[in-house]
Image (cartoon, rainbow, N blue to C red; front, top):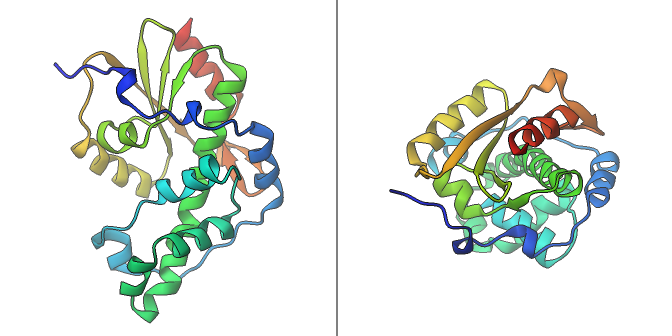
Length: 208
């Protein structure tokens, strides 16, 4: 059996005191921009340095909620060896990939902090759980573990989730719960789609 033991995992919530208002403020004031240029190798074939590592280094170690541009620039600065391998015509598509990834990272962080603020439960966010077990947030009432899978409903996200399922190592003592977000029905903060009260209530219902 594959059993989940919380002590084996780094937990973002034990490392950061970032408040929900800090994320709200950046979402409200930072104007999101996007690039049309794409590169098939960057999109589908190359193994890229972790976006998550870069984002949470800024949040946990630098103690800031980065803007879209700060996230992009930090990624270029912290991964110089990788950036040097890119062709000149791949630099703009690489920036475009980062700009498209940023809203997902910001949205998930916003939901993480909303759960911490509004619900009385145990929370774990770990990159290892995300990458190896397909769990974006682990929630527990002290008796049962619920592995939340967050995603914005789209053809691209469906494709990514299928790939993620193939590499996920499921736990036998965890109940997996999908938390989909429909873009046209989502709450908005600035240019960001975010999880709303109905998603908090969905999680709260699991715990009661």
